[in-house]
Image (cartoon, rainbow over all chains, first blue to last red; front, side):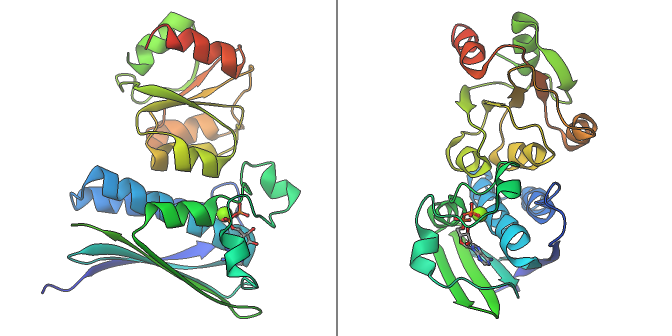
Length: 141
Length: 108
Ligand SMILES: Nc1ncnc2c1ncn2[C@@H]1O[C@H](COP(=O)(O)OP(=O)(O)O)[C@@H](O)[C@H]1O
Ligand SMILES: [Mg+2]
């Protein structure tokens, strides 16, 4: 098997107004690889939601995307506050986003549900006070 | 109908029009970005009153045909230029979201 191709991005936690750069770049990269447009759309939307969460809830982090033979894998890792109750966080509409973030159109509480919906596999590891690591996969075949 | 034809038929103003020939297949209305990402279809015209930079990223990722800012809303400073650079069409409508969509439904 050939070695998986991977991209790594550091996600800035300061800038709310131009967040999402890494996901937009991944979309471009996957297009160049000639992946199916629907797969690209699912990967980049799921990654965008995770990237935005790292910006607004965790002060930034690191995103890694691996293109393997059977799937595209997205790993998002941050050293933010962590998620105390993952089941609650996964509920559609649940959000702790502050008002100034909401006024930009974020904070609908639909990010984690979208990530789940658009991927074939999703795992959240989180420790309060330490950070969060989210792994998602979208199957290619 | 293409984005350019829509602009002419509804006399919309242009904030950015890098892909005038992009085909519009439907309409999605909403201001909460996660709803747009979750529900808009590829090729939709996205009607919103959100005017900040994030609409360029959302339109790119959701692959909408164009963004239409309704209610006479103007894009924030620099958004038009950014959209032009990123290949995102942004049109401006003086009408509300409902009236804009109703006018479009007669054309699509
Ligand atoms: N990386 C993260 N670090 C800390 N908390 C997070 C993270 N991602 C999500 N959360 C928590 O989960 C909640 C739900 O996330 P999400 O569904 O994306 O909705 P939203 O971002 O709109 O609030 C957030 O409001 C936040 O409390
Ligand atoms: Mg979110």
